[in-house]
Image (cartoon, rainbow, N blue to C red):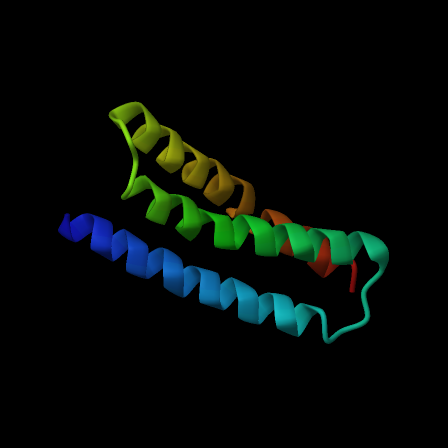
Length: 91
């Protein structure tokens, strides 16, 4: 349980950082493709914590695994600066 609290806190802090980055990115002038990528960054970055939180109230082990699998998928999509590389090239 202690690890779950840590994960929840970490994903919440990560989501806050993602939202701040999204706000900063949208203060700059970007083309349409960069705007789409920044919105995807926001969705993926905030979805990680949301799915981890939903896993806490899973109705079964299968549901629990599914929620964490989705969170992992979103983290992988967001990770390795995937979106950052594309947005940076748009400058």
